[in-house]
Length: 304
Ligand SMILES: Nc1ncnc2c1ncn2[C@@H]1O[C@H](COP(=O)(O)OP(=O)(O)OP(=O)(O)O)[C@@H](O)[C@H]1O
Image (cartoon, rainbow, N blue to C red; front, side):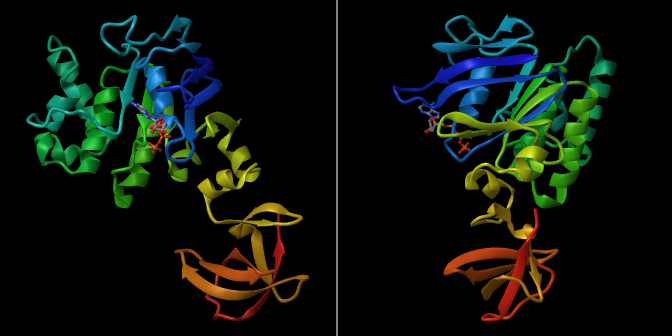
């Protein structure tokens, strides 16, 4: 189990993180969200032992994670970190990069393990390609596979699928997170993408103004967003008194109701249309199955 206990940290006098406290069990998937610059990568770096802590402690199964003051080489065998930089060997193949840290004394095992991991990140067609010839997204997949090669107990992922195109993203996410669950590897994922969170995270942590402002299951946080900032992570939303924060999909256009608005713009968003309308002189957003004309008068209700 990972325990982050009351960690406060700043690069200078300004504190980037304040009183951060949470636990991650073996095999658990924890997602961290927050605006750009809110401290997500800093927190991953602290967990990895990249910096010395002045306040608070971090433990993995009772072993304290210590920074460079105490460790000549940063990091621990039981933990791997896939940063936004990847840090691969460009002149060697995908297979060699992934197998780099596996023992040469067991060539058959090494080959099988590398092959299995290439499959997890769906790079079979590039096994023998030199990394320098890969795209950014393909390199990101090699970095994930390499981090898994020696079966870490905990994996830190910073924006793990950010470079991967939408054609691949869904199946790759399922494949990687399934692998982690099946092997009981804990993981902490810093992300801006709700799709990295909703179907996969056991716990979601929201950082805002240096502090944890929400810590719960993604389902609970999605259904009860405490702040517009949290709702904005999940999709289009409105703040309508006395209802509070309501997502665009919670508004239904009906034949008649007490709530009326005038359509100002319509956006196609795949399954539905997003209707922008003027309600009490403010813009609101409604998901609707039909395109509506500008200036149309609409009535709507709000569901919980
Ligand atoms: N090495 C560093 N030295 C000094 N300040 C830093 C350093 N790394 C990050 N910061 C600052 O710390 C704050 C948090 O940065 P961090 O990279 O942790 O945010 P983040 O939430 O991961 O952002 P993003 O979502 O854009 O990746 C920012 O104000 C950033 O400028």
